[in-house]
Image 1 (cartoon, rainbow, N blue to C red):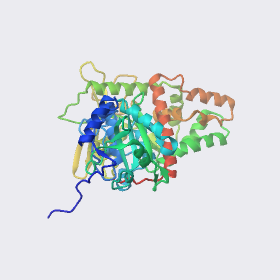
Image 2: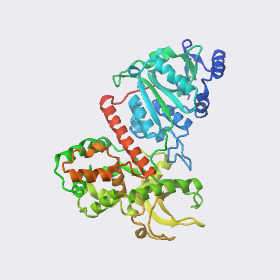
Image 3: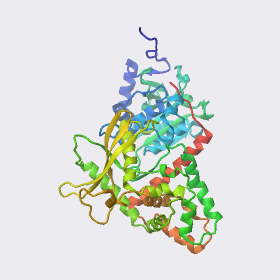
Image 4: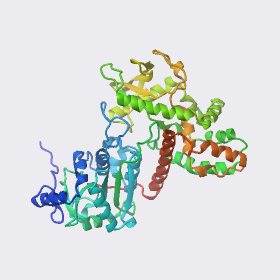
Length: 503
């Protein structure tokens, strides 16, 4: 028996004009001639329909990220790296987004975490004239795109809050083209820009704040090559608060005599789940037909990761951290997580499970993944240097999956084929280098409370970033930006909670 349901909606016109109508086509041709449809071609190439009723924000963002050719740095399915709604699981669990949608602030956070350059404006932070200038600028370029957060009621459409990208602008009639990601409901349509501003200039009942628009463009550099911060764990807010708020207080409150004492106090006070907050980014590969050969792209990405790791390990700060970790008592609960990470067989199981989640598109899922067996080996082909490969068989229910992870290394000596795990200890990102980079990424004012002048000068000499090699400096600045973004997300979580954009 056929089930009742909804099949599309009639687009209220006026005020909107259907993109495919005769009038809509004429507007399109005139806008092309006016030079304000350049951004359209990239967007239309990656135009998608939101896969869930409340995924309008995720669909809009993944569409724009793909149009800007921003590499997510992790695989979607098969061998392909590609932004999909299911991969935008940072800042808010997908299950919550599916139920309630996503707020304006959380969408901005997501765009930052995905590696884009973002400028966000609520209507009470901008003007309609500024909005028009931004629309014209992005419509005349392929380098930036506008995502609008608006209320459908202004256009006599059913539904309330909604996100969609702006596909172009007609200067003569002052109209914007909305590429509606709810394509099952309404087609792309032209609307008067003044009316679009009114639709954005409405208070979101869920947050008590006005809607607005987001400018998304490519960053000047790629996201972190080797390190990233994860806000998927439910306690990330507490960890970010500890690093940005509590650490400066601790530094100011105690009379430290040497740097080892500073490290002891700071890191023995770390939240117990700190190990889930800082991640190192490895190259996850799907094993296909037993072929372990590396593509030139994979070799290039791995070489950059290894260079960053080498630069970390050459800092004087790294040597202090290694000395500190070697003296840590294994019964220290908060530090045992980091010390434990220095055992490659243990990390192999974890990264293989993470890789399997990524390949299955279930990175934020509560489903249980466990690794039945792991193997650490070194690959060497022709004249290429050896590459550390972690392989595992990951089980998820009745499904088994073979996963390969390329592990960056910076060993001093050689590593022949077939070496065992014990020979590879310390040649991959572990607790010591992660802590080193995180200390470098803390704001400089973190250390302003050190009372002993000699110690203060020593710490500032250890944590200064101005003289770091370019790759490492950019990596540190990336993490620092992420910390700043997490602070903003933390503030949004308090001020906004969750918005509920719906179709």
